[in-house]
Length: 274
Ligand code: ZN
Ligand code: FE
Ligand code: FE
Ligand code: ZN
Image (cartoon, rainbow, N blue to C red):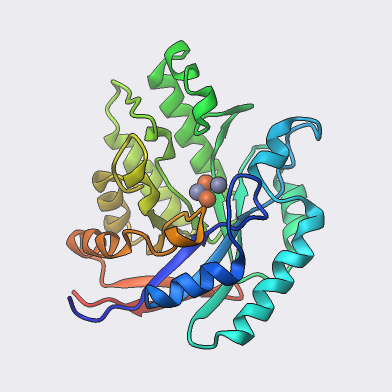
C-alpha cells in the first residue's frame, strides 16, 4: 500500500469512566501504528442527566477532570513532536443544552469538537444494558427520531465533526422504512452547516459489523461534498488506529481523495491519493 498519512480523531482515555489507558500510552500506540495525527475526544461531561444518575460518571469525564485532561495532552504534545496531538471533546448533543454547551466549551483551547447523539430522550440507546428497549419501540420511529437529533445537532453550530453518524444501527435493529430520503437529508444538512463526517471503525467490532456510516450514507455525504475524517473510537490504547487502513480504502472507493484535520477549530486537508 502506498504511504498514507493516517489520522485518528476519536480516542478516549481513562478519564471517561468506561475507558482505559493514559494519554501517554495512546500516543505511544499511535506512533507504533505510524499515525501522523491523534485527536483526543474525551467524553465531555453530561449536562442533561441528574447528577445522581450513575451514567453521568460511567459515560463521561467530570468538569473537575478537564484541567488535567487538557494539561496532560499539552505535555504529551511537547514530548512527542513526531505525532500531531490534537485536543478535542466528544460532546453529547441533547436538545435544550445548546446554550450551556456553548458557554462551557468556549472556555477551553480546543482543536476540534465532535458531536454525538447517544440519547433519545433519556434512553442511551448504544448502551448494551438498555438494548431490550429496541424490542419495545417502533424501529421506524426510533430511526426517525435518531436522525432528527443528528440534524438538530448539525444545525446547532456547536460542532466541527459529527461522530458515528448511524450509531443507531449498533445492535442490528433496522427499520422497514426507506432510509434513502433520511440519508439524503442528513448529508444535505451536514453540507449546509459545513460539518465533517467521521468515518468510525468501531462499528466493525459491534454487532452491526460495519463502519459508521454505512456505505450508502457515506456516498450521500460524498455527493454533497461533506469532508471526512477518521476515528477508531479507541477505549483502550491498543485500539488506537484500529482498522483505519480499511477505512481509508472505503473512503477512497467512495471517491474521497483527502481527509479533514483540525487545528484550533480550523479545518485543513491531508491528501490520501485516489
Ligand atoms: Zn465511550
Ligand atoms: Fe460516541
Ligand atoms: Fe467515543
Ligand atoms: Zn464514539
